[in-house]
Length: 78
Image (cartoon, rainbow, N blue to C red; front, side, top):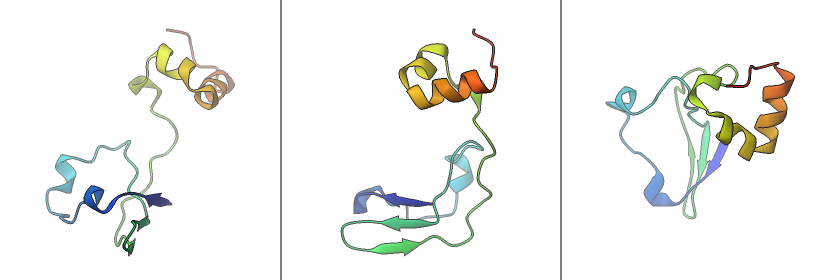
């Protein structure tokens, strides 16, 4: 997985990363900035699926691909 970001968005420190990274976050494998390409070492496992409990119905409906997945997975309307 790759992310294109500005140089100021890159976090250099890995110590204490557990305090800001949640289990639903995805750490990318490669970061591309205007000045560099960074290969991220030792990335944790990618999340499995969508954490529906973190989204409300309005958020789901505002993002058409999420709504399709929600309906495909027969998720209950809240």
